Image 1 (cartoon, helix red, strand yellow):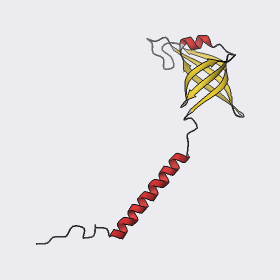
Image 2 (cartoon, helix red, strand yellow):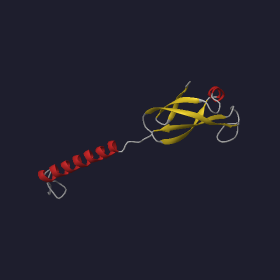
Image 3 (cartoon, helix red, strand yellow):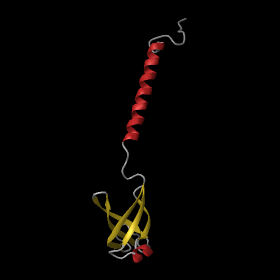
Image 4 (cartoon, helix red, strand yellow):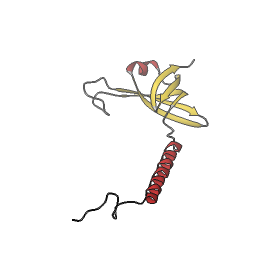
Length: 123
């Protein structure tokens, strides 16, 4: 009868090899988590930007992703300053917001994770 003792044979690791493998695995995991936290997405987070409405766009029902049964899609296009750069944004808005903010309106945008959360009038 042939048999083997558990932990012996070509597949078994020596304790020193096992420690090396574990150390290497932990080192790679630490490096991977360090790299993941170091590359921050600029669109994640929240920001408030003062901007001007430069264009209003309307997609009628049945065009551009709007369903035939709905009332269409409303969009506002904004131009604002972020530091030294001029940024342009296009966000879907409600019909009420579309009617409330004509071209030239000065507003404050609250943007969270690259989604428009609120539009406030700035006097």
